[in-house]
Amino acid sequence: MGIKDQHFKIARKARLFSLFLLLGLGWMTFALNGNAVAEVGSVDALLPESMKGATFVGTETCATCHEKQYEEFRLSTHSRIAVEDETEGVAQGCEMCHGPGSIHAENGGGRGTMVNPRKNPEICFTCHMDKKMEFRLPYRHPVLEGKMSCADCHNLHGVDARPWTATSMEDANEACFKCHKDKRGPFVWEHQALRDGCTTCHKVHGSITDKMLVARDANLCLRCHIQSDFPFIGDRNHGTNLTQGTCWSAGCHTAIHGSSFDRHFREE
Image (cartoon, rainbow, N blue to C red):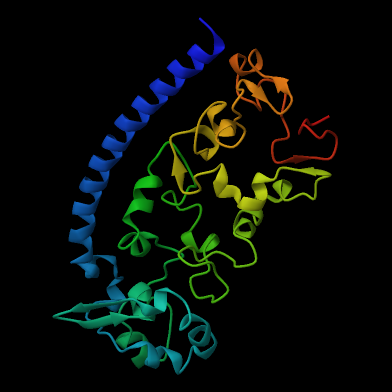
């Protein structure tokens, strides 16, 4: 059997696996969404005892003390969200994430009188239900374990954020580089994929693949490095190499984020 035939069979199995995975994830999403709807309808379950009975007062009330945060937040995507509740009024702006603020305002502030999403990601999951599902996948950031919070990567108040991500407008990679400093470089030979962002290769909330990669094996690299005369990649035949392991584990491109020693992304 030729290399091309082997590649075709592998690709066909990968497509079938992807189909079954999507069906499975679809069922999980349906199940999780059903639970999430019940949780949204019972917001009190997320509130500490000190907030029971609080009512919504509006973002303008928050702005009287938190002026700096208000000026930033009013230009963000989150500030334009509002949900009406027949019994408790309208949750909009600040109170969508921090809960009803009447007790907090009456007491002139104080801990325990507002929800802190940094300490409890469940308030984020009431809207971002798909992310809660991803955090339950085998390889993930440890948010559900309490070792990280959504706010470690996302600036929920800031105006300097990419639409729909709440990560820095300067570069979405900056959120990753806060912890993964060794991946920043500078490198003499940089991997161009980094310019498109870490999410080119990594599914940052959670993945079924080790290192939170979006694809396993050489298929990850072949998403970009594929040619009409495959298995030629670049100017040489990779037919024998592709059977020895992943591009980075087969002893070839071991410095996949970038290298200062070799233009083929080898460590030395």
